[in-house]
Image 1 (spheres, rainbow, N blue to C red):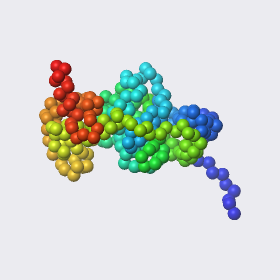
Image 2 (cartoon, rainbow, N blue to C red):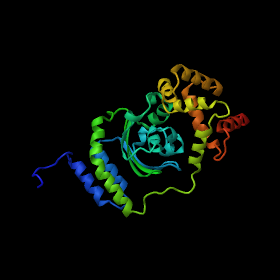
Image 3 (cartoon, rainbow, N blue to C red):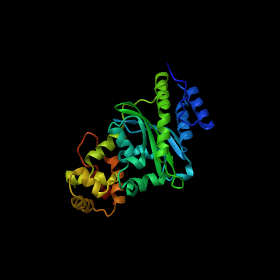
Image 4 (cartoon, one colour):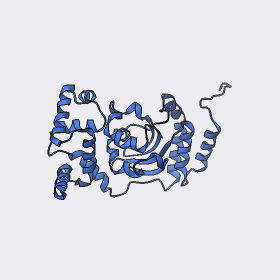
Length: 291
């Protein structure tokens, strides 16, 4: 016989209660993703946020974006033009992580907040901290709801992650039902030149100048790994990694991580998918022609 007891785990504020009602009423409709973000915002207050699709064979596709224009120094679609290749959250998706809430501070490399990706990209869109709620559709596709806070706000906490985890079963069930009801869930398009160029840049950037090991170190640098953590991943010594870093800067004729990041981003349009040619060589050749 079932005991007479009341189970109560999550406090439902008026705001959260209204948001959950909106989630149900908008199932299958065009404003459903707004309703999901309303629920997540009611659980952990955010300064900005949105939704996008991650694909293994295509660049991320934006679905929804809420932000204060005054807080942004870069256009909203800049992420999908190439920087996503260095995003720790995107790499979790590529690694096959399951559906869940992923806090940037918990999953980012140890030197991420000193990386040029963070300084050049994240800080200029006003983001100091974020949590990504990933709902995995299949091994190659996931829907992401990104929750962000500014530099002048409080960072997220483990308590925020716990609160999200308490509500996510409801959110994920609603997403699955919406996916069944709606024909408007974004699907991967047939051709994505930008993504192919990003992939080609990752595969071939600086290959004409650097050794394979130096290129491995280069991408750890770009993603925000310290020399010590890079050494751990590559099963070598901290000193060896520092030598590789020095050689990379010398061979590329640069003096800072900012220049390295800029080179990587600038080379993307010059990549030739399906070829093993180095986009950096093409980029430098074009620059010399202009000069």
